[in-house]
Image (tube, rainbow, N blue to C red):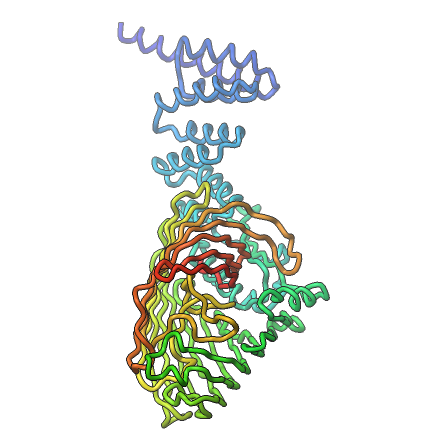
Length: 555
């Protein structure tokens, strides 16, 4: 009796496999109705995984999408360890433009079969198409891929610019990992030669090997770009002149002139990438300032009669920066200021005493996932024994945080805690000034650093504490196709709440109350910078601010 049962089992299995082969041939010929009839009969007699799988494929080809999904899910429930079902469901969802469902199925495959190349390849391809390079490489890396066969630059075998070659942090014959690409991207963006930087990974004829394509969009020096630079700062009475990648050397020359009567400023900068492994970034700069200051709102009563003064200075600076890894950025430099103040508040150096200031800084990214953060530490010091006419020192600590609330809508919660302290006799320009400016250092969005063209009206002190919180959501991404050196613009709205307090160890400025500012705004972002238009209100003072300012993007 047992022998008969075994014979019947193998006989029916043989018939089932023969029917599946016949159905598969029918699918190849486009005879989907015939395939459905054969496979339905097979399932009724002897349900096997292949019958479910090819029946789902036949229904999909016939655009019977509900039936296809139901049969593939039933097969997946019966045979949960068969990776072909979640893979086929992923293909099905992609056919119906449901990328999130497709990614969920592929991730399920990789949980049960981490070495499933089909799933990791398809998942990585989806993520790359959405610009999610981190997720794509993490998917590939689970199966020890992608092994790089060659590195191309804009699809060419040779690098179009030497800084690209020196910035690349990965090599052929190795597995490309996210931190290596992110380090490469950070170094390239730091050169400021490029409007945008991206990565593509494509398979080669060698099994399981890929080409990494570093895509860069070079900044141009056309007449339209030059004219745009002269006009773009008109609302804040500033003109810009930029020359990018002079003679394909990687060297940039940048300058600006602010013609505001009481806040004149001319700045020039030469930025030079140095041919050192991983690139060093050398910056040589000069700036001239002629400003009116009015600190009557912030000084103690005994100093108010002397609170209006002029500040002039010519400053020469040198700064060097290195990015050994995208999580760590190191920098340091020196600035000498030849000052010519005019006023009677000697405690703020409203005279012709000069300063030489040394500084060092480090940026550290501790976490880079759905929750991201960055720690910025900066120290500075001036010593009369070395150069200049004064002694002072201090430091700044800034802790930036972001959590992604929704990837679909690109909704983020950001918060930053920043504090600074200093010791010694400080020139007025080395005090911490809070409030909005064209390029603010300490953002307090219900206050401005200057009022009626005079600096010194924002909260000011030798020490401060500042909290910025934001909820932002993307509204649209607008392709600009590198017009005016802008590849695209991302438009976001945001709601914010800021809190701050200042103190003065030198007892010249009054300590502020606990300042509370709130409001809303728009952010118009390029890959590297953000133009922020904000409407803020100081809850303590009941005053409103409508302002636009520019800052470098962190995330």
